[in-house]
Length: 73
Image 1: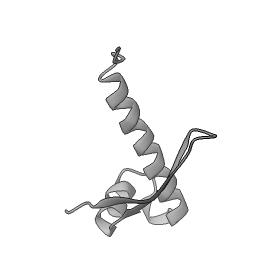
Image 2: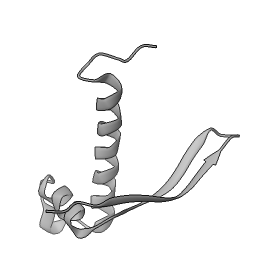
Image 3: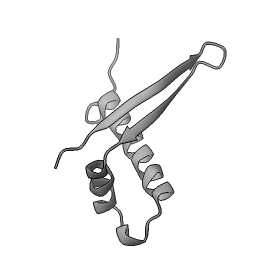
């Protein structure tokens, strides 16, 4: 399995302090995400994309809290 995920078309709004970007992934990334879903054979691509977004959120939070301990500066 060769999962590839790329980020492009990055925009940052200073006014809203919001980062917007496109994410592109290959079929291996799609299949890996489908494998974690309850009914992968019935999931439309929009649902798979939503699941990928939720996984990204969990990954960011996991890095931020590092196993339950918030990083302090």
